[in-house]
Image (cartoon, rainbow, N blue to C red; front, side, top):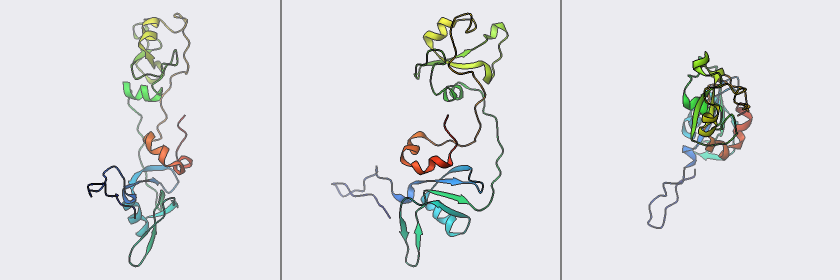
Length: 187
């Protein structure tokens, strides 16, 4: 088992994550991603027969009498049913859907506004199919007009986001390439 190395003062280095605290991807019986758990929990689930190891990329843990694989991906042996909820329309969700990119000029920035493709004062609804991310200059340029009237073209037609119900932080994807084949595409 990997442990924190002591620093020069003899104290454990808090920046080093031990293997037992590393995240593990949990799949449903149908190989659909459910959530993340810690290695300790994953080993317990496998030991009790509630899950099986699908990917083992980190070695083994030795106890007095047994050797356990350190899983990176586990699959439950039973099906977990989850209700699917439509994502709520909010600024953050629109920016996430549009990947923090202005839908008119293509500039990626954190300083975005919401723009109604068909302006609300002209009967446009505040719904997923009518709201896009826009940078401040593009939103001012478009004003209360439609994109055609303002001679501006949308990069992508707005639509409701796909609700796969599972989100993996981007920084974890870089460290766990073996998870990619079990996660829905990010596009």
